[in-house]
Image 1 (cartoon, rainbow over the protein chains, first blue to last red):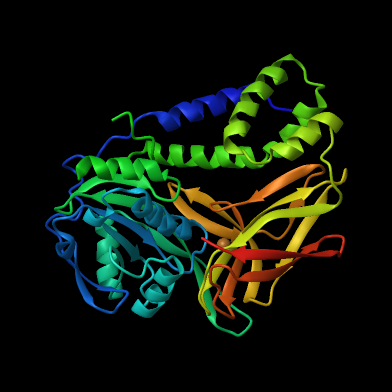
Image 2: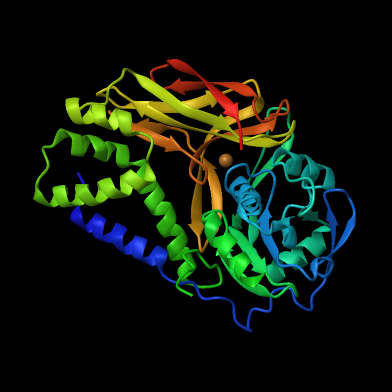
Length: 196
Length: 199
Ligand SMILES: [Cu+2]
């Protein structure tokens, strides 16, 4: 049996969901002016965000040992690409915050599983210190939550992390920071089309 | 600006909104119980209003389960036997990597049942997991040892919530593959499920 209060709460939540989200202001410069030495899924050096200058970038943050939430983020970027008319004018980037396990080869396998191993999709990893610097600037937090061994004795760990997709303009400035996995695809498409 | 219905992580409201979404999701997950409440038609005044509103939410959120709902309304009971699985699928994955599996699980019995584990040849470990928001927008996942299936209810394993977690895949899972999983119940019974790999 449903308590009427729960309905009010649900209604309030629905209202909250359809209300506005403030775009980023000057206090959130994004990556403009910064530069990070990264490596893509092909093992090529990538300067981020420099190498993407001139196109808006939709970037998601993941680790590949996270098949639930992070798969939603990755698949979301693919959906946005799929649903956009001018997707060839956008760069789609997935950056890992688990560089120890997410080597270029692992990222390439992962990208293939999502049908995203070719442009305009770029998967980024790098030296742990450089990845850490990037995540810090992005405001992406992650920490190991559980560490154990599988039956074969291999170490295995899970990571707690913030759930982010960000929209950057053609100069690497932050346009919008979204709750990644739960952001509806059409919102991302609309926001991208607005800045194209 | 009002068009942004999404969440916004630097905004302190974001956590609330993210939880809001997740809460609604879990609300909807639990809603199949509510269906039988509605179906039984023994609903008091406030519940009627609540149910009407909730039905609307359900209608938009859970389109596709209409046939059974129709049956429910006629008999007041979910029409079936034991525990049934529908819509089972899993994410693609690479050998040595991970995957997640999803399905709807319905307990048609008038007594509760409990899911206590899962096993599969495709992974070194197959676990029942749940993604959750730990705090301040931090997402995590945890293993669930025992998952109660209330009588006459459906639980939804879906992205962002309950999932089967395949740890250390023994083989590549590519779109179109089918994998077998055995679900274990507290009664000692097992049930086999076939998941189709898709994105
Ligand atoms: Cu999991």
